[in-house]
Length: 253
Image (cartoon, rainbow, N blue to C red; front, top):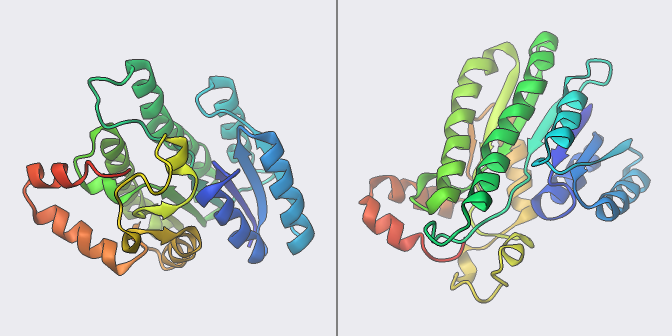
């Protein structure tokens, strides 16, 4: 495997992608805001797996930083074979109480940033005739869950279209749609584990999410839902009345 660029790579699902891809022999470009965490992860994976690691400290909500990552993806002298769009954060579901500037930043990070990064890399991938893009979304993309579900729904829809448009030309685009996953994502959203009202059986391990999504991407799938239980829940959500789904979706993140 060649080079993979991962956003939000300093922790959680992003760090798990880095670990599993390094174990498969991929060189890495790790993108996040936390230099110390990126440096530590890059050094450890380089030592354990003898892969090349590159750190890009970037806030994808900063125009200059985002442009730097776009330029790295577009650099045909150092081709990126896989892009993992993983960076994100959550807001409370009470849209009317949220700061509108926070909502705009949330939209930009979950929609504009992955769209720009895909646009930067997809041209070189198509020229080479191969490449893979994984967009980390959520099962919330099929549920009415304020602006978080709406943003993830956009990412799923766009990924499905892009895979249909580009897979025949060698570029697979996969939306990864996990449910509740053991990471620090919920704690950073202000919801420490154990205070979310989520049953233990609904939680997934990041290692399972990543391994399943990489397998589905290799098989050319447009959407990866990494567990049977969430596939069933998504099917049920598509059939249930929107008001009922919205009420159920108010729990957790």
